[in-house]
Amino acid sequence: MRRGLLPYATAATIARSATEAIPPAVLLVAVATGSSAANGALLLSCYVAAGALAGPFVGAALDRTSRPKRALGAAMGLLAASLVGVALGLGHFPFWLLAILAGLAGLGQPAPTSGWTAQLPRIVSERSISGAYALDSATYNIGMIAGPGLAGVAILLGKREPLLVPVALICIAIVVLAFVPIAPLDTSQKRENASIRRGFTVMMRQPLLLRSSITSTLGLAGQAALVVAAPDISRRFSGDLNAVGPLFVALAIGGLLSSLYLARRPMAEPDRWVAIGTAIIGLGFVLLAFANSLALTFAAAFVVGLGDGPMFTATLRIRAREAPIEVRSQVFATAASFRVGSYALALAGLGALLHDGIRTVLLAGAAVAAAAVFLGWLSTAWRVGKRKAG
Image 1 (spheres, rainbow, N blue to C red):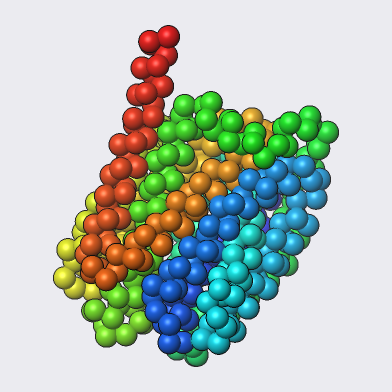
Image 2 (cartoon, rainbow, N blue to C red):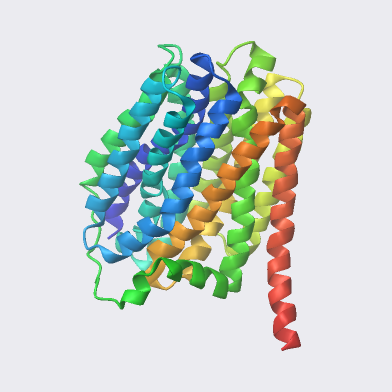
């Protein structure tokens, strides 16, 4: 089944390039059409909040269906169509209508992210799954290079073109998805296995899964600081928005290098690396806050990426290890929903801090990363203490 990795990695890379292009594309188009970065951040919060709400339902649907490719393709089609509406409507439609369109796009967001990752055990053997998850993590990092980079180039072609980049990529990914070999799943499991509550229950009952979920959820929330601050960082050092794409490319290169290293040398202790990676992310945001040149800003973004690679790869390993196979899609989707839900709140909250300055936003991101490590450790300490008391 190892041969299935090539078409999977190809399709996943294209799909993740699309999803990674969406945040900078929304911000770029919002600013270019006369709105503001704060309004763009609010639209993004609608998009990711809807994705958070949809995640458990998408996971339950994938655990029930014997034709996951059809379900994934339909969700991605909804995502693409809604993004076209946002692209055409920015600067013309009232904000409430744009928010609805962004929310509709978010309903399809879990499909090319956690929905695809959850299919890996049906594509590769158990012996190869560790390296496959590291490779899957690398597809996100490649997407973080290609997606924002293409969106950044597209702004040179026109005000709305950045949002047409993810639309085109999603359409290509749907076509490539047809060539991914996904083994059929026995859908005769008990109905309670398909309940949308099951993924949450599994997460709460598995201490190591709970700890990694808390740490990675808050760790992703902290990374929203870079998305919110990127347009102002670019204008501060270059006088325009052209540095937004390269800034995200620097972030992605750091994540790609660390993820590819882990694909060749799988980590022995993924539980520890979730915290280590998140701590490195926090350090990167401190460096970003005090960077006084564009070169140092790129270097600091690279450090953030170096931390994100092992943090995300370790998180995927732990989910696969701790989740029963019959509800694996739900666990992946539910955990991802918490992550993107926290990201949505962070986008809105950090966007409101922009009037206090870029440094305030970036230091807030570092503080959230520090809180992620502490609260993850606290959740395990609390469970251990409770067990001893009992």
